[in-house]
Amino acid sequence: MAAPVIRSITATKTTLTPGESTAVAIDAFDPDARTVVLSGRVVDAGGHVSTVSTELTVGDPITYELTSSDPSVTVTQDPANPGKFTVTV
Image 1 (cartoon, one colour):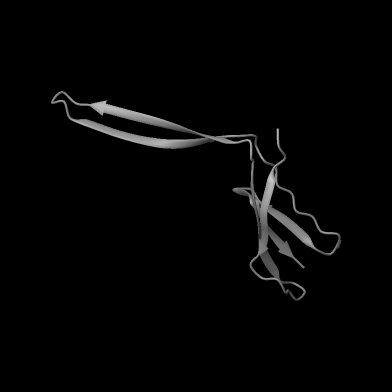
Image 2 (spheres, one colour):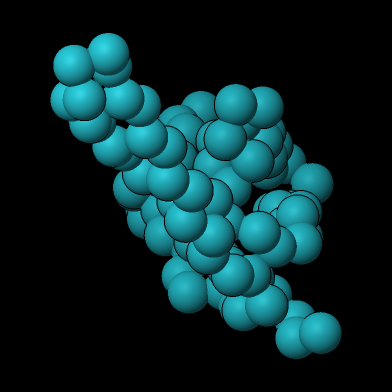
């Protein structure tokens, strides 16, 4: 199994003064993941057909972590989006 790949780490604001915050996002993916297509079909009594499909990604879960070597910097992970963080100086 291959290691996860980080495409980028970006901050919305790259220069901060004390007390300011910035949003940081880590864009990463699992190269071992694969896509599965699911198709659904319904037919009514008159023979009318309706179809729809959706894709699922099957892969290992990725855990995101962002740390700072400066103890005065606070890093908070967004619980709704694990690849996004708020960094406050």
